[in-house]
Image (cartoon, rainbow, N blue to C red; front, side):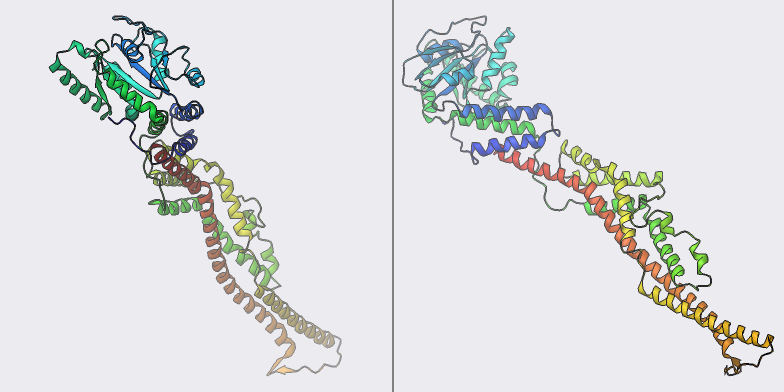
Length: 528
């Protein structure tokens, strides 16, 4: 009969390390009770591995009247345990020791003060007689629960009358389904049954255990009174004690149970792109752009370019009028990185951003189970309070870096305009000199002509006409340049807002997703 034959694929140390990390990752995401339980398992394993591994603590557990104390006496060859029939007689666990040397620290940790050394071949066996798990004394049941959770090997002693009792199946056997490798079930008092009924009871018990998830657990028919089956049970214990592996198998089962308790739905780790994430991210970027006033800013960039172009290249005689008008970007405080004064987002724009945030959270969390999905959705909104300031800084930085510079042709056009003014001035002065000489009846100066038009008039009128034509041409170029600057600003703003959306919304959600992926990997490793 093989009890501890399953070989772990991952070392116990690795599984414990994985469970500890999974508990840390689950902090604040899963129920605190399950997290604390996992940490308690890791701590308990650390203590047990530091105690005697040459001793195997085996507990006899059962209900009132099951005969476990009689079986304890039969296995130890003593009369240490007081035998009762209708009421609990064992108040505190006691131990029978085969080869007691070095077992003291282990028994101290188990908190078993009643210890008896017996002679025999099962060196390293510590056999514990537990109180009745159905005792009317709460302290008795507490003692059973405490030791059932820490001993290396469990022997459940059932009797023909109460082997189907729901109390033992629902409270102990079913929750310990992952501990089948460190469990033995004994049907005691079979001497009270007709021989033909023993097999029927054993078959029925196997069915009940299979329903509890304990299919394959060794089941022995025993009579402590007549000695039937006691030698077989003693031999089984001797084999397990000689292997010195029950303690590690128990810890491995504890780890697997704690891992299962941490995650009832350990889906595979999430890798690669999340479905629909790109689409909802684009929707989020558009919503943030509207809320940040990007259309207003882009139009202001175009108008600002035209405004400054006219101020720099317009006809010097009239350009001062343009300088009286405020710069559209300066009016929005979007010059040189200043704090913006853009209009606040409307209710519709705020609602669109909120919807987009929910969509990002929903798309990112679709591949993970609850309550991790809730954590992912919360992460997507965790930094939403920073969006307003981040968008404001992004808009200000975008409009002060590259979209508000002065092109070189403005200087050339401005120089040309001043040349036209100089030409006009020469023509005007020339005409004034001629007028003054005529007024003073001085001899007229010779005046060259262009055709029939005198040069002073040509210079005055030609300079004025040239200035107007240059101004009109510069306005055409200013309009084209404004559109180009607007497109450039839109591109820069879109890139900046995408970065804000990624840093404040998408990245936190993906980090939580990565946390779950690591958790799922650690749970899988701990449970393997």
